[in-house]
Amino acid sequence: MQGSNLDRLLQIMAKLRDPQGGCPWDLAQDFKSIVPFTLEEAYEVADTIERMAWDELPDELGDLLFQVVFYCQLGKEQGRFDFEQVAGRICDKLTHRHPHVFGELKNLSSEEIKSNWEQLKAEERAEKDMHSVLDNIPKSLPALSRAAKIQKRVARVGFDWDNTADVVAKIHEEVDEVLAEVNVPQPDNARVQDEMGDLLFAVVNLARHLGIEPEQALRQGNDKFERRFRQVEQLASQSGREMTEHTLDQLEAYWQQAKAKEAK
Image 1 (cartoon, rainbow, N blue to C red):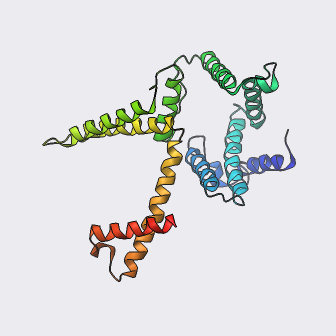
Image 2: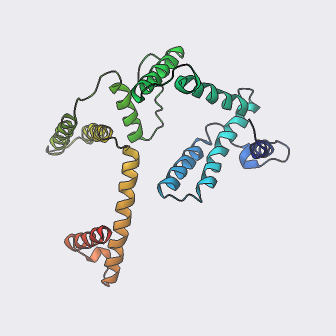
Image 3: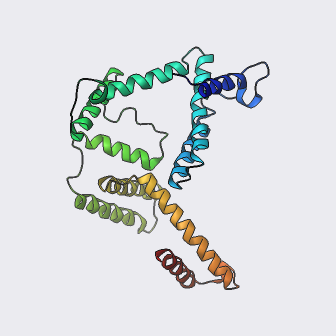
């Protein structure tokens, strides 16, 4: 299974963690301390793909693979698991979840494949004494992604709106509830935050119904805003005045120029 470069990577990792002559930084790490780096590397992979920077992708994937190898080295040192076991587990899982490829279930439709996949995952959760459809959804997921995953899980058992119109109506309802909390003589920030959470959850639900990944959509929205605002800054600079010396209407005019420029 292991090719020469993978063997080399595992050897490098072992050397970095060698108490005699290893890297002090790598030796100081544990499972929890490298989690932030793992998340960062995963986002860098996603960013590289979204930018279609294909020449950079092998480097970023290598950084992410190194994180996996790091965990495996820690597991090996503690007698818990090693890379061979990790690779074996994913091989077993993939072959188990794809009986239409590796087993006897042939010529299944896409819907049948999806239904069988979900059934197999449910059986795996039951074997681990996980009986709720919401079990094993990581709390460390970004909030938008976790909301979407929660909604997908409950939809599988029929807890879902039948049509997009009902989802949109729920969003309007949540907006009204936010405003009801805001438009009181002394707004309670905790209650406003609670209602805002409901509103965001409803918006994620709309994205799901439209087949849109909310985390990716918001990243795209962030990038678009940043790109246009930088043009606003440039236009303001060209006027010879500071941003703060402009009225909101003037800045909005620059914003519309930036939008029109992108539309060309």
